[in-house]
Amino acid sequence: AWRARGRVPVAVDATAEIMQIKLGDPLGHGSAHEKQLALAMALVRLVNGVSGALQKGVYAKSVASLAEQVGLPRILVDLRHEATHSGLPSLSVLSIAADQALDWLRENYWTLQRKELEQLETQTTEVARDLLDLSLRSSSDDSAEGSSTKRRRAELLKELVDFVPSAQSEPIARAVVSAVVSRPFRPRDAKGWRTFLAKVFKYWPPAAAMALEGCWQELRRKWALENQEEDQEEEASLRAFAAWLV
Image 1 (cartoon, rainbow, N blue to C red):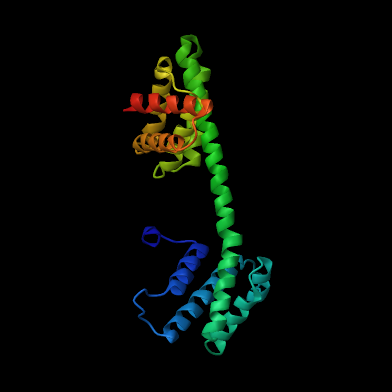
Image 2 (cartoon, rainbow, N blue to C red):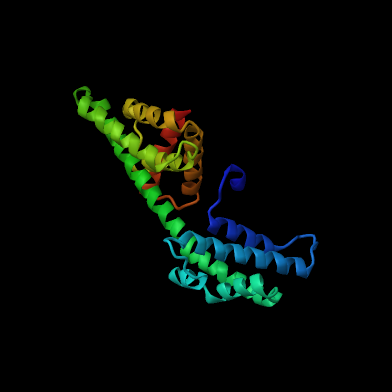
């Protein structure tokens, strides 16, 4: 699906290819030679893609030196040379190289991606809470709804739009659920919540249903825990918010 939408990062493409080859055909179709050829091609493309992205300047650098810059295992560079200029390495050697390639991809791409996504999730939640607090304050005090409040609300919304693409509503829905848990929902605050949700759901319409589902999942999780006073307060907030949202 990702490939159908456009260009896929080298690391993503390589991970998908290698994993697909290693998992193999569940029906057992395909010979060992076909697997050998497919693995060799996938690993050669990975080395070429990584080194090609680093190739800058007037004078070309060697693939080995470029690979060393990013810590790409030497076996992958040697395997690329052998597969390109000599012959296919053995399947056992290719399997070892594929495992090292996956380890490198995990450490140098996927782990970094996860950290970035976690940081983005935290930032999104914090901005959403700031936007909610602003909406609650202005709804409880009509005099607070001045030009500075509107300007600050626009700034916070712009931050959310910059953080989360319009096609990705899940982070927004999680931020709303987190806000419900951290800012107990009270019926008298409905106006502020309405302002907050109207602004948010305008840019991410699917987040409304997702937030409702998220509240339900959070309630189920709390029901599975021991009854603690803090959990009971959060449960009451989630119940009240879900009923109001419906």
